[in-house]
Amino acid sequence: MWYVIPILIGYLLGSVSFSLLAGKLLKGIDIRNHGSGNAGATNTLRVLGVGPGVTVLLLDALKGVIAVMLGSWLGDGSSLLLVLCGVAAIAGHNWPIFYGFRGGKGIATTIGVMITLAFVPVLIAGAAAILVIAITRYVSLGSLLLTALLPILIWSMGFPMEIFIVSLILFVFAWYRHRSNIVKLLNGKENKLGAKK
View (tube, rainbow, N blue to C red):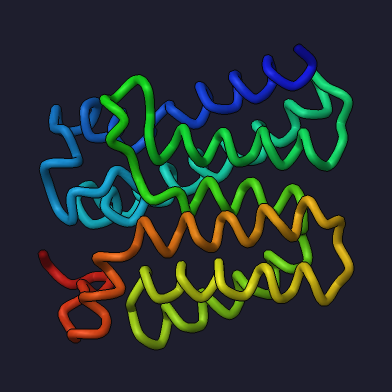
């Protein structure tokens, strides 16, 4: 029970889609029917503007932070439980029970989870991702780079094996969820940040 309760709460927390809520509250729309069709911060930025986009980014990341902390607050605080709570939140974001299991790609929530588990690697990988986004204006490319760098940095810095394994899982998670973006990047058809859909 020490494991089940915080993991379940982490999933339910992750299932709260702030981009969908923002779309409903601000424009009365389902954001999944606009822009890229993704329920995440980048599409919120594209459809609703900078303020809502940044707010959704921060709230989605906060979900990940709180989910990991639930492992300490409601459980034994072991690395394994913290990791499982974080993965549950990301799964909730990607496949939210409250919204027909159609969610986002989980990058902001992944950042929140991983910054709580491995702050310095996320700082380094995040800086590299932001640089790539600034140069190319491809958010998807920056997201893919972030998740690819994390396992390498976490391994090289000697973090617990559970955190390294979850970074690999999240790498697979992110690249799978971005498979259509990868095809568009390879074909030169990916949407750039600030470009009109």
